[in-house]
Image (tube, rainbow, N blue to C red):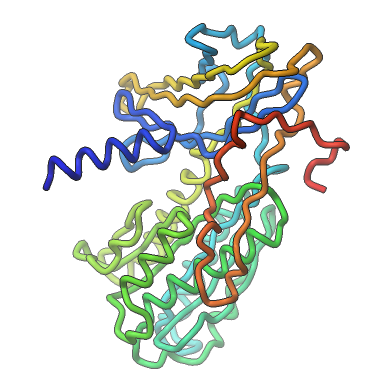
Length: 364
């Protein structure tokens, strides 16, 4: 059985267009090919279970059909993701304590610290849950400066004595998908952060249903729990933050925010001008860097494209042209099967070349 699982894992790595090297994984999230000779790859870089953030253009090497390309000659650059990616964090926190109680006040402050840390990097939406069906809206906080207020948490009626954890995760996915889709950008990067004090008690949704919804969207998922023994948070594929007790939850909130910032920093939009002028080509993107311990780390990913019709005049800063993701509205109650954030459709057959946008403002 273990041998079979190992083979399945290797097949999954091969199918996703990524490679492992020196403990690192580089995965191709989306690829853009457009005339005159622009290539852009949105990639995700991780080391074990940890995101790798803070890389620079010199950490990326490019090859076409096995031949290394000079970064200067092909004008290799890292582009701002904002024009082509909708990005958001949704925080879903278990409601505890009575309104205006010291415990509720600590929760309010912990949420505000979480948003303060994330808001300069990414927009944040906050919801609360208890045993009831659905989430309680606390607030939406746009990316940028400004002191957030989670005061709405202090007036929400006391919890009902149960815990609808599975339903909260499903509804959190739904809210994240709705907000990302509303931005009308071709790619979506989302993180769900769930704070829970124990396992599901309400039984409104099954664990299998929750797992099915999470698999259908493939958001990054982080969880915060109390104590080291938190098997009920096994769904958090992007990491679990442990709080020793309820009094140290604010510290755990801050640690979860740090992890969420790094999670969004693991995505890189690498662009360059291909020297190819015709035919099928294979681009290899190689990543090399030093770990926190000073050890060499790296990985690579390869993608095929068609250079038919390529020519001079490429500007690598031209916004990439990605195909929009499509999915059913999350409000239907069914997780859209292809609402996958952090994922894009496979390139068109034959590496179809998509013409550049008609205007300069791609976000429009």
